[in-house]
Amino acid sequence: MWRHAPRADDGRVTDIITGPQMSPLEILALLAALALVVARWLPPAARRPVTVAAGPVFALSATALGVSGLRWQLLPVLAGGALALPFAVSPLLRRRGGRPVRRARWWVALPGSLVCAALTAAGPAAAWAFPVPVLPEPTGRFAVGTRVVQWTDPDRPETATPEPGDRRTVVVQLWYPAQRGPAGAQRARYLGRTEQEARTVAGALARYSGLPGFLVDGVPRAHGHAVVDAPVAGDGGRFPVVLFSPGLGGVRTQNTAWAEELASHGYVVAALDHPYDSAAVVLADGRTVGTVLAATGDDAEDDRRAAETTGIRAADLGFVLTQLGRLDRGEIDGPLAGRLDTGRAAAAGHSLGGAAALQAARQDRRFAAVIDLDGYPRDPEPLPFHQPALALTQALGPTTDPRYLPRLTEVLGRSTATGYRLTVPGAAHLTFTDAPLYLPPVPSLVGSLGRTRGPRVVAATTLAFLDATLRQEPGDLAGALSAYGDLTVHRPGAGG
View 1 (cartoon, rainbow, N blue to C red):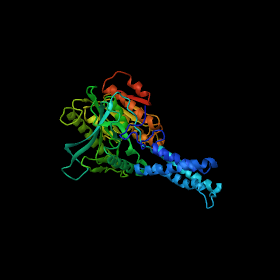
View 2 (tube, rainbow, N blue to C red):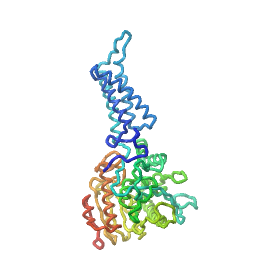
View 3 (cartoon, one colour):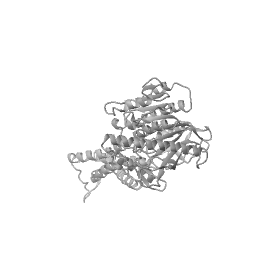
View 4 (tube, one colour):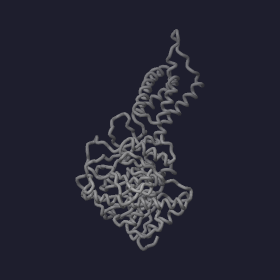
């Protein structure tokens, strides 16, 4: 079931209702504005009570929204109501002698009413197009906990800075199976540990994508289902781990819905922020590190830089797997000591992160499986790897890189284990992230699967793959994957 994510401030009139994507207070302002627009055209007997009721409600709700935090989507609603207010109130006023003020002629009032109605309707349309994301409720038997850690690799210099003593640092968010807590437990904020971090990250993502920041100002308001530092589930034994690398310019939280779903089914997901590559990484000391990568316009140079970045990310994944092993052994403080099965680990990623996952698996046999979410392989010299692989892709056609399918086929064909390439009909590149939950449902942007089906497909297919490869659960994996799209199976020794 997909419903409103519980939040720390549940019960307040600023909570978003998932249908109209507006809070009760915003809906109240909208209804009052509509009443003011319509009041001018009501019969005299109804005009006065409607205006007397709607006017104060509109003024009070607008004031309350200004105090609690006004979303840009409500600005046209408030403008429409404010413009309609004089038209609605003027017929109720009386001149000296008790005569009512004459109403404007209908042919004068009609254009103004239409403008006010259009402004008022633009508010819910904007709230629908750019909503506060509502993450799907995890379907597994476990509740979900989350924790953010920062680790520095003393053996690797940071190549993005000139300081010789700077060492590679990554920020990692863990989602894990947790004990069920009270209904009012505080849920983790979607994009960051604090509201300020969430706003910093949202602004950086917007700038990286070339969008005005105000369009996504609702995203930092969102909360997931995981509880910060929740106690680990008492049962379930030792949990397999899945490491995740986001897309170029992406952030560790870009696949939160997917991570929470996996954690609810008994996996620990460790998603990485890659400093100087992710759109924004807020470090423990408060510094914000932005991306230093940008297209040069030279395809060969861009390919070289992408391959270099992929190698750094692959090393980051291997380092985090090492740290998770230390965490399991109690060498690092944390709630997961003795509960991580790093012998059953998968590397996963989206876009450039998918390329990094493939390279990490080839270089590091500790990874037992690999998942590539629509990522073009960037290893300059593809060599055989030994793990089963799942590659989810959008439909590859004239608008996609013509090198993509041949290169992906070549890489999967070199594996000494079975590989699966699943083309998801109606998917776009961002379908494999949380983006459909908060961006306009434009097919070229987020695919044509709607807000919820994309995340569902990614979760269902990757869970089926992980259960089969990391847990060795019996079943027809190919049959399960085929239910979601066009499947090609690459078997060892069978060629591409």
